[in-house]
Length: 631
Ligand SMILES: Cc1cc2nc3c(=O)[nH]c(=O)nc-3n(C[C@H](O)[C@H](O)[C@H](O)COP(=O)(O)OP(=O)(O)OC[C@H]3O[C@@H](n4cnc5c(N)ncnc54)[C@H](O)[C@@H]3O)c2cc1C
Image 1 (cartoon, protein in one colour):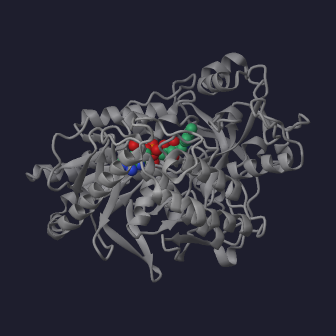
Image 2 (cartoon, rainbow, N blue to C red):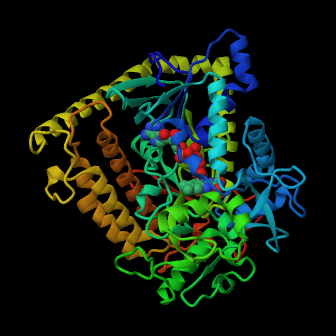
Image 3 (cartoon, protein in one colour):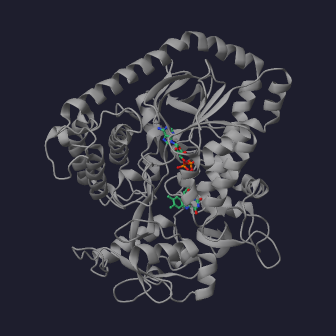
């Protein structure tokens, strides 16, 4: 579905149709303020733009659960969810935001249920919940079941339910449109619109908007081994950098402990929650040594580091499908789980293991290794989703610009996210951002101010669209002139090595290897510098020189892949710069040259822009001063 025509001015444009974007769209149109605007005779125009058909968004891959202290589980209470979130994030969490997350989690889950999410049920008919890493009561002493689940396909349920609700509300989508530019005013104080490329036709659209919300998801494709789908190329974060904005805490990338060997495909934490155990080459359930209290269900950064320590010590196992026989995996032993129960609550995990590893988890040990999973950092936002810049020690809101979900950083995950908190973040803060958008639209004074702003804004959005149109023309002309043997549609040869035969996919693969070697699970100053050098000397120039190999404007996937590769390269560089500046170890960032957490100097959020300027924003501490973090 695409809009029949592009409006001269939108009241709100939402980029992304995963949990965050769809929640925002629903939060907006269901807000009483939106109703009020309509009752006053205004007819606000809203558009959701997505580079994928919405139901292909990565939210649909989420497996294990969504966290909430629903009140059904003995000992649990939102205060413990709050405590666990702050501790899980190694105290780099803004406590006002984390409190909101924990307090509003039950209402968010109930709301999802009412929207049509079919949660699994307990015997007495309540929403079923399972244990998840780092979720406890009584200051970590008591594990609790806090992740509400739908077998191991909760994301599929959530995505479909939200999308159906959006369709029912008549929300307009521009599907398979790729946003190439975020346009701000010259002073970077307010948003003016976006530029979008319709992949069906190759047409470039200038989309003027009074309010824009980024909900573009994560950037797992920065790494060779990742659980993320191919589309997670950090577009929204890179667009913010391109527009002169900063990213917050972008050095923190979560590696999930149980990626299926040789593919990186996720085997949900639910596998361990239901009784799966990690074992080394000696058959030892080694997590008991690293986290005596929580063992296999310690926080993910702790488990991933433990796996790396075991493989470094020569106790790793080889992936049977790895031709080089590297012993960089450990076993996931699920044989202790009752086979019928496994089939009922972990169907996705079982299917993935059977399909991609030819193994039967009821009988076989499964080789796993850490896989890049989640970006804790992103576009800095307030708890109402307003994007801001950190300037001269204060937050300056970028008028009309919002963000939510994995591309944003409201700072509830700090240096390491707890399982189940991400869907919650996307749905809860997505909804809040939608409500804030509705308030802006309804507010007559604001509407007038931004409408006025819109008049002189037109040129900048139009100019950005013209520049993009010219670029597309140039790229397609290059494709035509570089076509090898007369057939411009030939796929690029895999073994070609000249500059004209380089392609976005090879570049992304090389970048993934570089990033993985430099900063996956651990790093040091030298590995960071080497990767920065590789980007400066090789990858960035190659990214600028890329061109497609087909000159067709319609459905030319290589064109969008080029923009994605450029986005990843820029984001990778920014991430490495932030890693280099944080001279301590905290959460997912483990620097072997600075192995200790250093609260004196680094209890602060890094704010990094594309010019490599790094500022530090203090962490919002309410009632939980930093403590040692043990599991
Ligand atoms: C395999 C897997 C399992 C997971 N399991 C869980 C779990 O059990 N519990 C949990 O809490 N979390 C889980 N997560 C994390 C969670 O699913 C994600 O963080 C969350 O769904 C992100 O939602 P989102 O709306 O921010 O982004 P996404 O769902 O990734 O959506 C991004 C949207 O942005 C659009 N987009 C991106 N770039 C552009 C562009 N340039 N132009 C136009 N559109 C664009 C895309 O089309 C897409 O619609 C899991 C993640 C993975 C990968």
